[in-house]
Image (cartoon, rainbow, N blue to C red):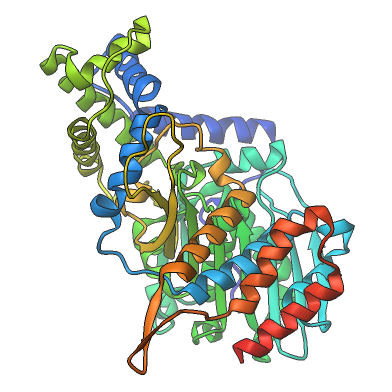
Length: 484
């Protein structure tokens, strides 16, 4: 089997300060080139004050967005099945969390994996805590009875990993001996992908370290599932691409799948789109990491330019007069639906001005499940909005992912607890409202109900000690039996 190689990522010594300084400088130069503006510094500042200081961080904008998002953005999208959401929540998000080594009551990693998967046959074969720049922590667990391999990849929690995140230059990588997207493509027709530099380097390192183990197991018919959150999600997706380029056997259905929660933009548009068959990504609401792309920064600049034009044309009155509030604190009228839709039109024009297929633009990979909030009606004055969480499949260049909104949820929505909360709320909403026709009678959809009950208890009761581990295991076994 040919070893993984890269035109850039695998040959750079990221431990060298001079090398890191050079790579970061190049990345910042590319950002500067992509975000040049026709506005002067004062105009950019004024537009930024209007957009961030008095629009996107204000409740009236948030409520208008929640009220209209279904119609404007998600009206025609396909919806994931409830059972699919339940499995993402109860298995793969938990596995991604385990890569951080956070376990209930300090349970050893191997035992935690065995309980999660409902099998004592899983053995922890490797556990790397490598957190140097250009590397990533991970674990490898193998069930020799069921011929299954689990790989959990750790997200960002150290300064070294933050530097890896910041190495966001797009670099080319030649996939050999097979195309990761089409196993019939020969070495002579090798496929080149564009990938996030730091994450590609980390993924190559993981593949090289696991190669001696995976060579034999894959030939013996083992299946592989990979899970990760944040940096770990980006690495999980790229590791999946690299493994399919190495092993033709992994192109068969069910042989390999990556589950990526809160992934950063990591692959070029074509590669991100082609990976739908073997990568599932989940993006929660306002998560900023999933939108941390140079292309989105450019879209933000184009939005500021459009906002500046609108402010000048309107003489800073009506909606555009809210820019005054950022400077003087002057109170003005509430944001109306007409005002909101005008801003949406500015955003759409900004998105259209930035080329999707540009070779340096990166995207979240695979089949993407967007978790988003909606409102049935605007709340009355003094009332909290009653937000409903919904889900839908979107493509890597969907409007939902092609904007960078600064607000009070952009960081918190990235964290694993926020993903749990949104998935639980979405599943609960689906179970309350999703009705199916069976033999002419209307009945509530109850697929995998026992699994959800187990998970809700685990999430909301573990902190007060109401659920013993034996009870959790019994419920997990009941859920599996119910599925079968």
